[in-house]
Image 1 (cartoon, rainbow, N blue to C red):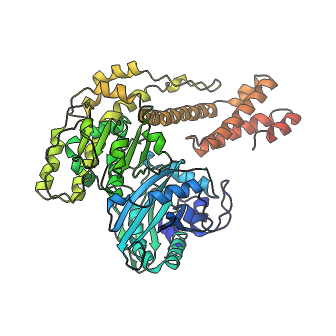
Image 2: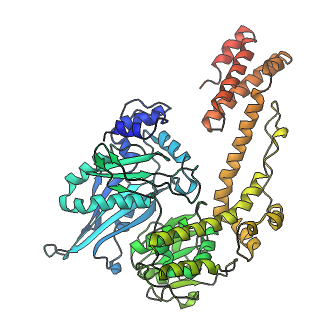
Image 3: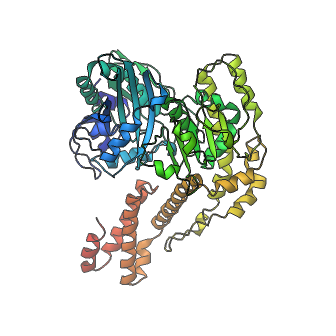
Length: 591
């Protein structure tokens, strides 16, 4: 199916800029630069790398595609070390995992403004982080007696800003095995296919052709109800059947990841919510990356705002920063496999030791929280090593429900849905009282006067918030008992609270600006200007013009009718002024 046909299939409400991106037209309106070759590719991926093993150099980037893709030497070094499992992992055969690393320099390309538009429509936990890249790895290690080392070792790596873990792992599963057989011509052809994809528009059902296979998916939007997944049905498109219909683009197998530490899921939820330093020690990058990603997702729809590294090595550029003993461990979640970390990170307060994750066929056994001093090596028994005392009493019901599911051979997908719903309800019970209190910081609409500056938001007061919990706390929606107030006090000091509150405050401030604009539009501004001096009238016109520019620049939630009405007010006031002032004011503030 052609890209044009896909565009029609995916709804008629795409903006002109998006349609240009889909159809390959050169001019892209809305302040973007003209569409260039590989721009559609760049909407999904920064580049594709092939990392091999050289006897003299060690790991080395052999291929970067497209060839014009820019990576700094520091970024290449990070990709090299993070694309191979540690030698102790013993990953024979094919292994898939994911890593995350800091971007060394900022760069924008011709469609960054359109991609920023997509980002605004995403749920907060799927928004891209401008400072980080994700690396999605397909690593192959097989015996090969023709090579000096005796093994063929190579990784195909997709570098992207998008945190669509499940989608990119599925994509790699389709192209990597064939790439290892056919090499670079196949990779070139696959990248050309990606450059014909429609853009990653949230809320659209997308059909992505890749080397004879069609992948059908839907990227969530910020308007979706949390905890719901839109079912993607397999359908026929232009005589071709959808080969793969993805139920999710980003979710990991939650139950499989948490099964080894099932009795501690609520404590782990608290540790992630509070942004506590956490290390996951695992036997391979696959287990470490999946567990870290599961931890980060357990507080959804809240965004985890600290750094997290699904796979972290001793060669990482942040190794010294994150392992120093001269200061307290930072708020970060690390996934590691090298035994060296058992010694290096002994001073960290919370350590999760994961054994081999198997398909859950037996009931997990009760495991006590272990003392940190008992963690001597990476070979120590699996479990959670911490002295942390949870604020909330343990929910025995969810443990019993999941154990019963194992006994009854309930499908892993169903177990993950139960666990995901449990985490969602727990997070919502925690966050709803905060949402309710923050909404009360908004001034009343009647206090907005059109010809005065918009009123300010009230300050967040921790003590005032705590007083609301007695009657409107989490007990209204959660059966859990415990020290909720202590949990809130700790949370209010965390990076996650700051990351949650700042966008709320910005959103409310913008809403105040929008309500102020509406109040201005409902005022007879021409009558006002006729009863005031020329200087005051000119000042009003300049302020109104600034309001229009601010609305456009900050994407204020103002409808087009209000903008049009305000422009008419400005025009009528200017026309009532002397001609010399008219000429000046018509030119002022138009750029």
